[in-house]
Image (tube, rainbow, N blue to C red; front, side, top):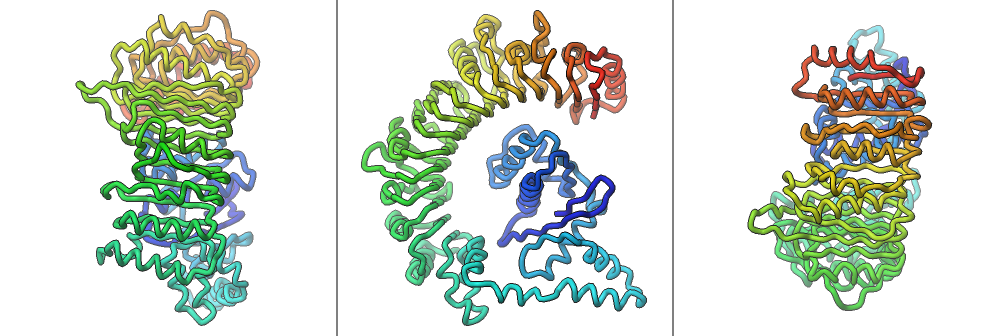
Length: 581
């Protein structure tokens, strides 16, 4: 990663290492996420991120969610971009990004990831190496020595606790492999606080069986010296229920704080080991594709703060409430639901502050139109994310007086026919978000009847940032009811949902607060022009409006005509800048 100023001068460089067999798209996505995180931590606010991996940029700009490991990395990147409106990601060719690749090659001379504050030597080294002229031979040799100076000595001089910390970032297979380096390294891995077992890393080509994989874990645990573990991660292809319980019990005995348990999709049902549910030291628990979440029995997780339940099958509707009842200090809950196991889904916790709920199982069969209900009772919640691709799913919430930020995406899989109960439920849910400061809302195909829409008459007094992509009547409604709105981001909807209706009187937010407007997927239609005209004319303190046209279906001539039309619109703010892309 290379940080430069607006003149092209390189200021700071940083390298990171990714260990293991990682695909190109995942590697590039991780690189972007690390770059965003790094720059955010440095306190910069207006940054353009140039990426030479077009696949990453394309995925980042896609509207639909991707539910893979890469998709999770992209969602984390989008979250940072949403929190930093002046961060932008754009594609550049590999030839234009040569400085980054220069440092990538130079970084191999170092024994660990590095941050360079005087990177010029490495640039000269690469340039001079390419010249192949004798005149530069002496300088090249000196620069090469500088690049490799004391790289091995620095690693050898580190104390054991630092080396164990470094090894904790590696899969256990690689960590144990360092035992062959020297006598000092022979049992160093046994003091690493993290253990990460992945059966694919232990012999996918040789088709490792459940017995040999379990034997590997057993031998490692028998030599393991740590009494208070930080993390135990287990991703397995083949393992019996008794073997799984033995592995988890070994971690629980060592006072483990974090457990990640991942079973394959095509594996026979695996029940949750009971010892997990009474682990007194557990702080973070991640479960993937685990079956038979119990609705009875002892549950005592007094230290658990974060719980992730991905593709977990519940015995009954009371299974999740029973689990949450034993988590008295739970702070964050992530639920990804991929199966219609129960018709009613309850989430209740008096301490929960962050909730991410996703539902994307297919129930579109014409003969199976069962309704599904999600009920949320979390009075202390400050962040809410709801993502649904499930038809006939009704979401209801209790009091949300502490809610600060919400991200709601109800992109139903196909156009909905008349369903007054669903319309009313959706509008009531949106009305319950009235205390948020930041709101991201997408209702997808739903076209709410006027008779139902008029019921949404709730004031959003705290709302300062709104990103919206539903029926356009929501836009007018929010402008009228969010008096303190400062940032408005609009992703245009489908043609039949573009009903722009001017507010009866100029909203307070346009007169006093709205400073930034961004419109994506602009289609150059008459309703869109009418909306832009109204905002430009009445927004008295507007500083900037950005309009991004659709990537397909609009040629250069149409874009030029659209720019000319919008440029002639009256502007209520003399300081307003217009950017048309």
